[in-house]
Image (cartoon, rainbow, N blue to C red; front, side, top):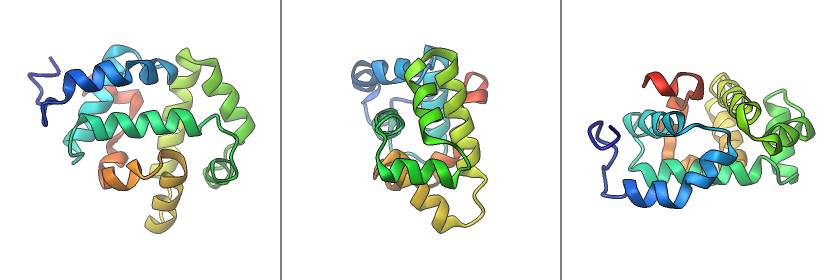
Length: 145
């Protein structure tokens, strides 16, 4: 289905799944949700699935790293960094729901500069690579994509 939906944009789909399936699982995403999330970002302008998946991977690392930049980003979103790290460490549905909350809050930042800064703090430079495609990420609707 992913192939039929055009996700193999750069011939990287199988490599992406092989490389990043563990990251999707860490974020509590089911297979259908992970492919839906990749579809959302590719349809939103991501160059390919590798860039989209790398952003999710980077986020899964930063969400629990306790760094000052991650704490600042969560505070900008009105979230407690320790609570979010606990949620992401728990995995499963708790983690997936937390991811959805984070991207919903990120999309709601009206100042595009602050939104971009916060995205980079949480998703690394992959947020810059994705540009507006990151705003298309909506885990709660990914399966319907």
